[in-house]
Image (cartoon, rainbow, N blue to C red; front, side, top):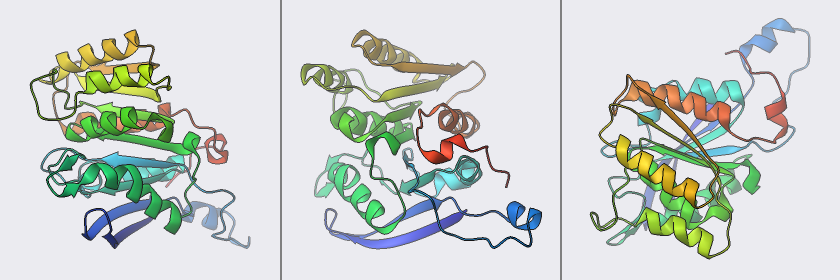
Length: 252
């Protein structure tokens, strides 16, 4: 795989920002297996992409530091983008409009600079805790942008208990506006303090007609071993139609 650490000037945030981008590349195994073949880095089609959001007090490197994300992405031939959202819930907070940055500028930059598909059916978003909230915020605010989303142990709040956007109302607005929900994969550990509110929100989405796949693991709380397992399950669940999804999983 190729992992790019990018620094660029954001016109939305009005400062330099840093992101990580995983691009699947050739592994050593086919090179060793066919040493006489003329190999190439040419790709047949742009890659599907997952925008992956971190939790509170984390940053763009957290998914790399605490999970096997790069290997999972390489095996499944999918590009992944991580960004430091600070502690601002991927929302507009003060002068920092992280909502616009995630919704518009980040995919605009990534798709202009990397071999990444511009198709909705190849575009996904997921995240844990605060990033799970951000996943729902963006997936419900702009459902036309994503084929599927994966809020993991999402930081959901009951209406009226937080200054954050009301996710219950956002879900209802998708229906009121006549839009379709992205396919949704939700997961939460049964020992997680956020378990009950995630179940409540899952049921709300199902009542509104969303296609929700739910997964829970009794032995886990709000912790990285759970998210490591769940991001792998999410990647395997994704409703992919790209050419790479038809190939056998690579060994790395």
